[in-house]
Image: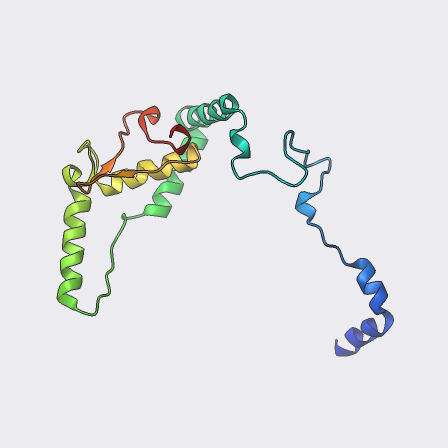
Length: 170
């Protein structure tokens, strides 16, 4: 193997090696499989390019919600993904160096996370239920965030996807 590598180096000149170098990305090249995006500036565009037409963006979001609700395969796939990611819920594992403090932090977190009144402004969901609903919204809609309040609860109502706080609505 070492001989073959040495032969190749001897056969290829430095000029030939530089001629074969490329300074572009294959992913950025247009082809029959990857069409040019309409409206993208030659020097690139911002990360919110997909918001250029809010009506199209919201229509796609509604279509993805419809697939999640009405398609057996898509809905079950999203549910399996959520179950596999979150499993038994969010756990806290403090490492302060003091075992008594670690246990106190765990106990206070678990009390907060398992009580819907303490965890959410509406008092309807505990932290694990909120995490499942949030992950579903991220996978299906594409973006969401919770608004922390001064009293330690999280703002957000999950009765309908329209009532969630989406970054595009702020």
